[in-house]
Image 1 (tube, rainbow, N blue to C red):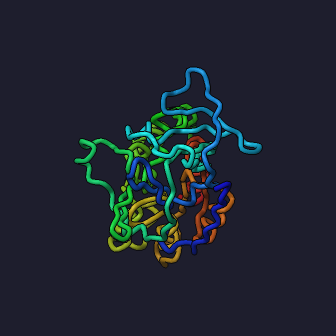
Image 2 (cartoon, rainbow, N blue to C red; image 1 turned 90 degrees about the vertical axis):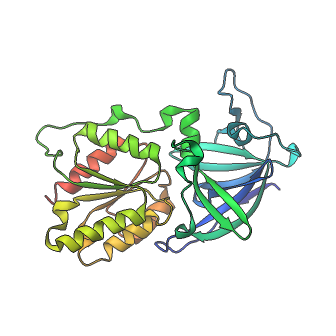
Image 3 (cartoon, rainbow, N blue to C red; image 1 turned 120 degrees about the vertical axis):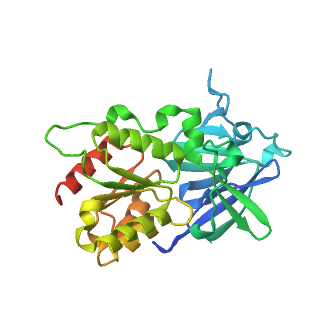
Length: 307
């Protein structure tokens, strides 16, 4: 197979995404194409002493060293029937170089976030699961995996580091109303803890962009002349079922009342290409998820220019 570069172009703010369907032990899973750098046929891996049991080792296809995560082992599934034909999904998110070992790849599908359902909490006993969304394509169900959770489970230091959060005297954070849109329960908890630690106590945290959009419209209907006093800043992820962060940002910034709300995109996907997309829809700032200290700094600057 060699190397296959991904070069999928999507118009920004349409609430669509491209997912790559891949196979592990006969089961269909999906990954957002925006996370993929390239696909490579499985290669020889350098094992690392005392590595995590889900980590196969490392390899260096060119100038970068990639950590290999065996998704079949992580998911508790069987081994490949044709291991020589397995695929590495090369990815870069949260400022990490990771290759996910899968058994086969199928096709790329363009779908709407509106058609992606969040798994019922009963599946995981009320806990946050590894499947972040379920999409139906033709006659198959594709489970979209939460790759941030996978890497966090293996290496917790890849998550938000609360020690980065700074506090400053003289800044009234306690009463500043922030709205957060984030579909991951793990990230919602981390963001809440981090913002509370920094002094931001007035938080409204929603599960996806659609909920955030509905909430902002309720505020607008109640009192359109004082919207900033109810929502001084919107912090949003990009990847979310029902409505993604780019669509949410575009809707906010094209609304005659809501457009004055500053929007910060806080996502694992932030790179040069995503920054351009964020600018196209009017984001005021864009940060990668590990940068929680920088997020608080940016909120301070943006909010206190307004209130």
